[in-house]
Length: 284
Image (cartoon, rainbow, N blue to C red):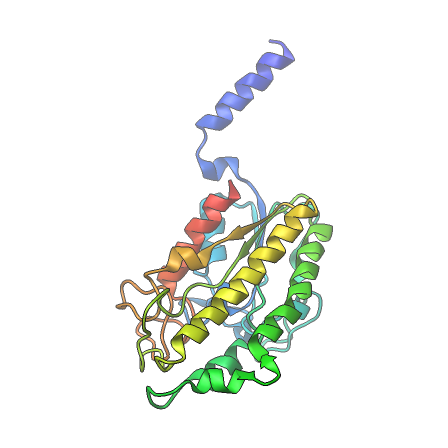
């Protein structure tokens, strides 16, 4: 049998194999708590990273048949923790997340940027004891401009550096950059006190999450323009209708008082399953 016929036979055989048999990839998951899955059972070492064996990386790796899966995610991570250790307790410090990358890595998923703009402190500042006024907007929008928007703009070059850093270490990898799932409904009012943001502040807070996600989309597009195999995974759009204001069996993100096993204002298992579907589809 000639070489050409052998090649055709092998190609036809590959089409008959299940996806898990075809995709023996080296897969690395990077990122912050949205990637790690704090409080979602079962939590795995290092325990200071609040990382779940059922985060979207683990779920997607199983479905993709990854031959080598490395989960470097860690709650609280910022862009600088891609190249620097992150102090966590116990079991810390967490090594630089880029240490998990290799030349042979074929798939990288990542969530990052939320902690660079101060997600946790913004949430605390924007929570309101009563459903009146616009205390969040009053704090962050001053004569000096919109502080959250300024933080998002300052984070943009850090996202560029992360994308370039992944590509330089794993030049054959497809980079799947996830944005942040919807915390508030995509339109209309919120659901104070489940998410204790006043009705007056809901449009502002929602707009800031969309602004962060748009910045990430722009940086992914810029990476593509530089010839990098990087793709936006739009977790936000997929999560519309599954925000923290929805019932327990519908929501993908928890409110301030959780009804599923997850951290407040973070994805639950349903959210991780939804993100895993997106990652598997984006792997292509």
